[in-house]
Length: 361
Image (tube, rainbow, N blue to C red; front, side, top):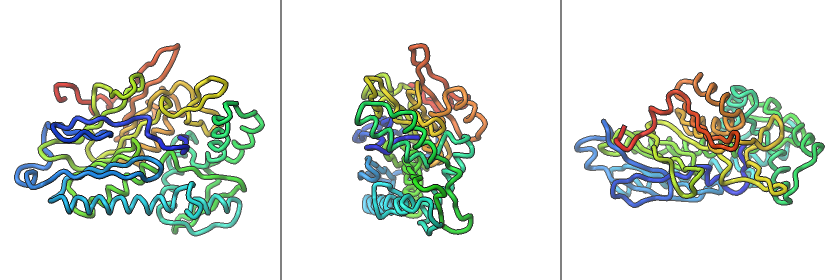
């Protein structure tokens, strides 16, 4: 699972192809091929963007709106929705429902917010799909390895085993009909760092839709969701950071239309243990950092799924990750990994269809 230590600033950072617009520090881009918002409607729309710093990271929302005032009001409403989610689901906030649930681990069921309930339900689905490669009960392991990275010394086998004994996604009880939850084991700790930002992006986009915004893109720390398309364009484009070249992006941007995209990787966030670089992504099944997975990019039908899957597929490894994606409609993955001292790249069969070449296709 991804660490919630610091911010994700993600394993990707998005560059921009923007045809004359101001360059932003994230991935937004426009490229024309077929139909986006067209004709008179396109001429009436204005591009508006704004940024904020929720959940310990940056967030930038870009919309096309009837006028600037409408765009800014919609973006403000989207940010307010994200704040509502953070207030309920952050384990850094003592008063959040997540913190209260952690503190009550081993006790009776308690009422929780609809957002936390929805996130835990979706997390359980991803955990089941991936045979536990994704697990939001990874909190005790994350806390253990955070101390390890601060000290520069690996935890003992006994310490790892003790923390690992508290990690079990099946020990999260969820009422199937109403927002109530329970952690069955004393000492369990939830950490939504591997899926929460994607969920917040999806909810922000939902607010923008409700406000009548025809096209929007939201990026929270590298978790991106988009719907509609910019005027006279057929999609948004996002650029994936090249892990081998700091500050650079891979040559082929990704076409994004009514989808989410997320990248997990260890080349920006990592710990050092006895001089050895350790990934910030932990395998909840072994209790140890994953190895060799440099960058895992997932495109899915929504940002929540892309976020959770990018975490899980980092744990599964390249071969199993590609097989996983190819069994699921609407899911594509690109993986950069180290093997025999070399960085190699593998993609699911449909990933290439999302990539845009210099010629526009």
